[in-house]
Length: 125
Image (tube, rainbow, N blue to C red; front, side, top):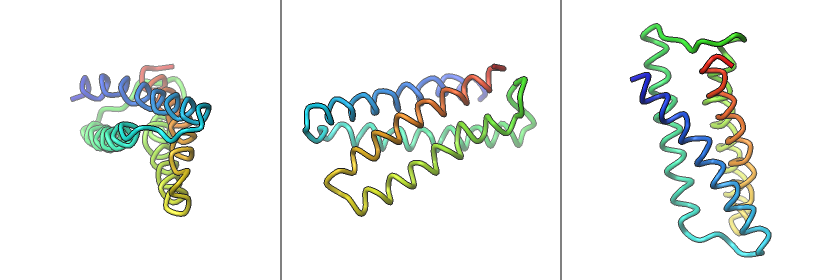
């Protein structure tokens, strides 16, 4: 199961980076993104949730990331902070439906960096 967690750990930041770039291009073109933007966002949210569940199972089975720093950073960067940002983006989107994609683009950019850092801390960096 730790291999699955590792492989998915590469997909999550890459997916968030694609979403952030998509949002930036849409912003620069002054057009709302195509419906695939929302599909990718939904997919990434589900994958992030599954990644957190698999990570929790690994943690409960006694496996922890090999890191030089505090282990809790891996959990905060990989699950807690991205989830909190997504909740904030959903709240923003509920109030500003016509520009919700901009909020999700900003959150995708931040989440790409956070989950990449979680990957680095999990690999011992």
